[in-house]
Length: 292
Image (cartoon, rainbow, N blue to C red; front, side, top):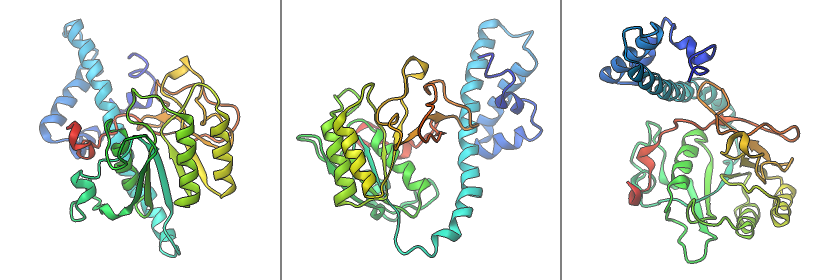
């Protein structure tokens, strides 16, 4: 906790002249006032505050600063990145096609089934999810028993606003065995049947699998870009396969201020790597209805 509130970017927020405006821009008045009180307690060293209360205040402040960082990140993405990409999108002959390999998607959720609903102020229609297929025995493609896949697709629809999305269900939930043969079949389907441009894999193993490498090499031969999660065990584990396979872009997690997450493993010395926000990202409105 001392590191978080020490010589870091988050610490600069505690003395930022426009902190109040930031808080009121992203939170209602009651929430913003509560967070400002936490800032004052920590900034003034809290000599008159009980130690347990100070520890709790620091903990809550750290969480809220991460949430604030996420909100700022998405705002900057809207203002800077989306506007930068807008002109390049106009002359495109076809949309970029992205396949996401995950726990499926809850297509019954209003955010996906109702084309008139506004999704997180971006008005994303259901018809951008062009296809979904299950590679898990006796499991439907358009369901999600975990929530990670639905959550990820919702975020992808916000970030890649002109892309067509394809969903491959490759595992039932986080407690189920992630079969490398199943993932390999999903990669082949995305490359050959869906003919996507990008495959994103929210998965990884602590060991190498030849079938996975073969499927990835085949997709690469079809000019497909592949991205895979680094792993979420921090420095206790090395980067997982296939993220540690050099042709695959390794995606470690960062917070909204661009700092590596505590769960991010030690970076690789070889191969491309691109950190992206992976903390305090909330899309509860796109959580599977069965898990709400």
